[in-house]
Image 1: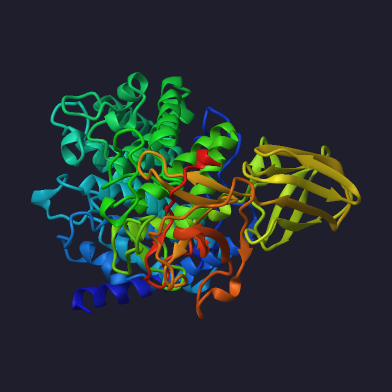
Image 2: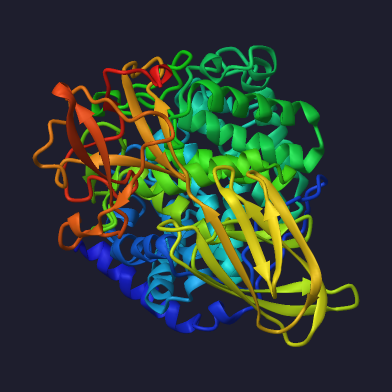
Length: 619
């Protein structure tokens, strides 16, 4: 360890000792609220501990990724400027946001100690004028410098939100002031498009956290700065994000079609709509959603080929395509969370569920915590443990899980996923607000059964809501002998006089369906079970030629058999299925399938698309 880093480390340890009460401070509140009301506020309840399949992956992210992060790698670019990598400074902000979200839910003490140490080291490197990048003065505001400050703000505001440490908001304010002074259309100010790559979209994506900074401080200069950014889209050489998506309604025609940076800007535009009510910005967001979901989204809930949006329905899924960049997956998830928060429309939640159960979790190895930068559907996932932008982004996405399994739609407590969990919140009874507990016992996604124990301090009349997943059939919820039924993609409202320890027994079927390979994989098919895409992992199918022509059974007659015994020792996850198909020569052929999110964890090649010599229409 370099002496400079060692000295800083001891100084930070001392700072932690004299600030030991920071974590116990009252959580701060934002000073500016959205003018567009929330249909689904994105906020953590009092307690939301996941303990099922998602809980396993959530705590694996904590233990195998966050607690094992290379702290020196995160901070070296700030302690020893210039950094060794152009965008090396982004990683610490992403880490702080992931850690803050995870600590809020888990209260994990080693994580808090680590998070405090990283935060204190970071702010110790901030220049008096607010600069908190990884460049030397002669290179300020070139390449990825604004981008780095964008993630500084994200991380500092997240740390402030969960600790109340004034130093965090002060550091963010200094960055905000520095950006406002340097960039704008005033005399002597720089053009922000010239300060970042990809037709300026890298630099202009600071829009999103700058709007957050405005909400925390109510300082209107930040809002005006964000309006300048949106104007800059139409400067010479700019990406014309708003105008293109209003006119052409295609993301591949925006700027240079770089997916991550563009989605990061659109995320900011969603927030600007929420703050101003400008309906054009909502149209931009809806047009982007419609275009991506209809033409540019993989069945696993991610997008991008070589990090760009391509022409319509070009969705090559092998390792050569460098598809499904992890940063795109997480930003797509965040975008849909914002849209669901605005509207409460389940079409956005369905995309959240698809991404979470497939591409998000599939990008982090559940055994090691290593992350694949690009996560293919065809071939081995290239997991790596060294710091990359996606290794920092995927943990951000996983840290959001407790925000989306439960929440309030139109102020009514709503269970959205049927994972095992322990939730504590409050409920309106008409006369008063009471605490409520929801203890969920479930083995989902292995099966479609869950028991929800409702805990109240006293008998009360109140309303709870249950989401019927878009893929679920035969959905029932039984309470004290009364049965509620629901159709796919519906919210069931249950208004009743609740007793303490009433139990809701939920049951639904998890159907299996076949997906045609489409334009990119004609003559291939994939298998979906509920929200999960299944994959053929070669380490569990050692005797199979995965490129045989296979005929799947007549529609409605194929089925999966649970075959957990075929999983190798040490495998993370319990789901494993056998499907009997027919190969060349009409010979029966068993394929063993696991969830795409679990596949390739041992380094084997795995395949979602399976070759067939019979089209779906032949059924």
